[in-house]
Amino acid sequence: MGATVPAGTWVEIERVLLRPEQRATNLPPETAATPYVLRLNGFLTADAHEGEEVSVRSLIDHEHTGRLVRVDPHYDHSFGATVPELLRIGLAAGSLTRSASQADPDTDTGESAPGNEAGEGTAQTTGEGR
Image 1 (tube, rainbow, N blue to C red):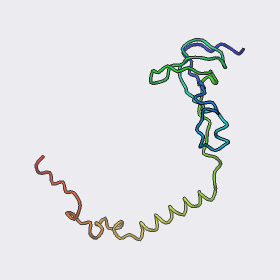
Image 2: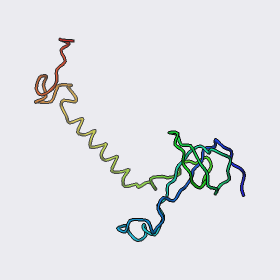
Image 3: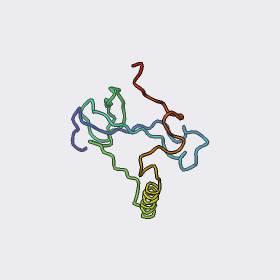
Image 4: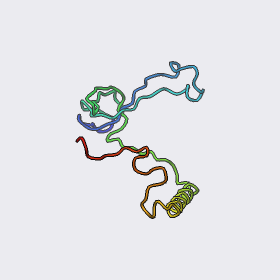
């Protein structure tokens, strides 16, 4: 057994909510063959070792039980590798936006666009009645 993890340590627990035979029948076979697992972080309520059944208290003060799987858990997911083509699309979109702004006379003069003059479909604040 590994080192004792002291009470109050931030840990991750795991608990099987549904075994494969308890899962819905309309799931894809590869999904139906795996258990439905809860993973939750919380503060250990008593000294324990990894792999043991433990109790934790969550940040919203709820108590949960499960198997201790990780001490001081962290997020280690990502959104995958960079896709160079998407970067170029973002650059092109920015270029189009800048071109449109430069061609828009309203941007240069600061005047309202036609049909958007004061009083036409916009709320007015006059300061009266305050």
